[in-house]
Length: 90
Image 1 (cartoon, one colour):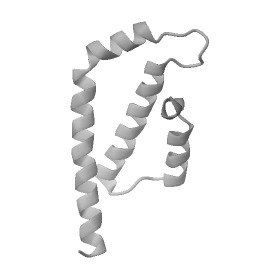
Image 2 (image 1 turned 180 degrees about the vertical axis):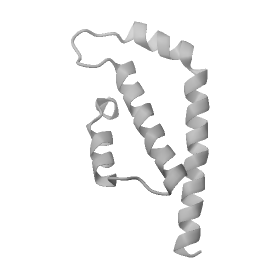
Image 3 (image 1 turned 45 degrees about the vertical axis):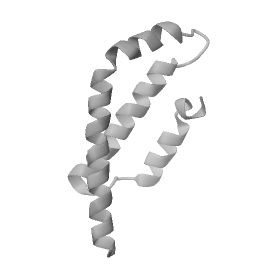
Image 4 (image 1 turned 135 degrees about the vertical axis):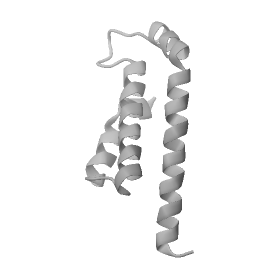
């Protein structure tokens, strides 16, 4: 398989995962409300749910960039931002 076909396949997979993420996000409203209640903490800068929201928004944004342009603008910055999210450390 040549590089162009691999990139197109990767892009299609990311777009498919984006659709799944959007659907899962929309169908988990009740669960997110329960998480907000059970894991609320005034000691943390952001709650677990807020961290999940940041992660979801960022991933959706990056996947949308790939869907529309085939790439992520400032990919090194994107990686740094994702790594900085505390939810990945939980």
